[in-house]
Image (cartoon, rainbow, N blue to C red; front, side):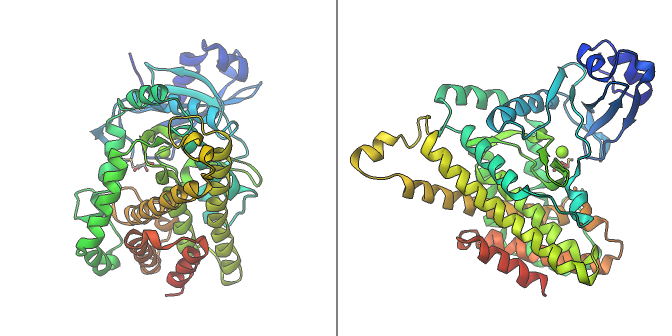
Length: 412
Ligand code: SR1
Ligand code: MG
């Protein structure tokens, strides 16, 4: 019954869906349909008509990046839809509005974000986004806190963990491509040739691999909260003043530091790749702007988390009665938890920085650099900082020390 859509057939096949007809117009012969998916997995169509536009995202039964030799279940759209519903509840306005979900066709019809552009592209093009760090930090804090037993009733949380545990093959991608493949000569890996000596050094470091495996264990075995699961700059769409989070199909329950760690890694990769994208005059101010975003992400995450801790601690964890009733403020305990989340985040951050240069799925920040000597020089800085973060994750109590380390590697 499932059939992938084509731009030619989409009008005929979806004209009877009331919400599409209502938003785009009832006569499909007046619709224009473009397939614009440039991600690794799905089809994405923009459907425009006399009354407006919607986006139709449809899962393919295989990994688009690789082809039908790598099958992938369609049910991931079901989990993505559930994730979007929860994110909209936990951080209203942060994700596109969902209009319709069709389980059999594995498709989601959602708000067309315009004039938004994928953030990764904006970062490559040197564009700034107002309020970006604050928005992202608050999203990570709200979804982390409100998706955990700090806020949820234990029974609801357990039910939800059960629901999402059916999403097996998608986390398996992260388990292989993010946590395992970068650290050995896996079949689908590829890297810029000049990096060979750097890669050999990383893969020859047992301490580094053991730390990465420890982070992997936390990712695989810890169900603290519902994660976005793939929060990179390709999963964010922005205008000059507004941002939205898209694409939570890698949703799973996992450690609170994972999303923020991935996010920061993608800003660091944007930072390290800049010398290939900017002329000398614009380079330093733009790189420094990227670092301010990282600072704002951590600052707003922590501020928002503290506010939620004070006002919304309605779950079974850290009940106020255990502390305040005995005249013992719980603020210090929240700070300890935030410090643990930051340490985890920086470990995950280093691993994401490695996998985007060593494993299967790279990113345009580096891949768009045609001169492979320039690319490998910048990627080497990224790999070296990633290794420091994995090995010394607990040593960056202040974001300033993290940003200084980035500046040091950038100057090498
Ligand atoms: C085979 S999928 C490769 C990558 O694309 C997604 O965006 C995830 O980041 C995944 O690791
Ligand atoms: Mg994606």
